[in-house]
Image (cartoon, rainbow, N blue to C red; front, side):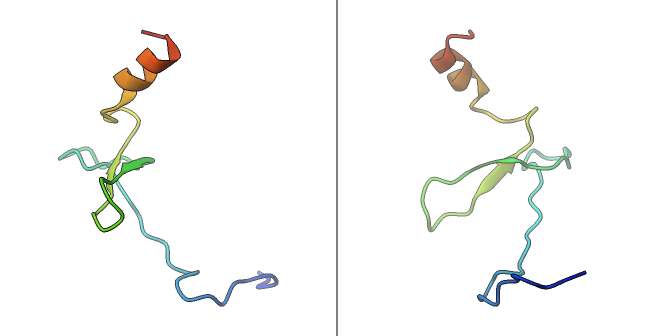
Length: 62
């Protein structure tokens, strides 16, 4: 594997796994939200994402 064009910036090689924050779910959390930059990001899977209704209403898909 080539490391050509690889970044040497601090933190460039850090990968943090984030899973759904709903207890007992364990699925990949692809939808994240935080109330501020200093707050911890909460992650949800597509099934448990709490803002789907708002998105559907905004798109007129209610």
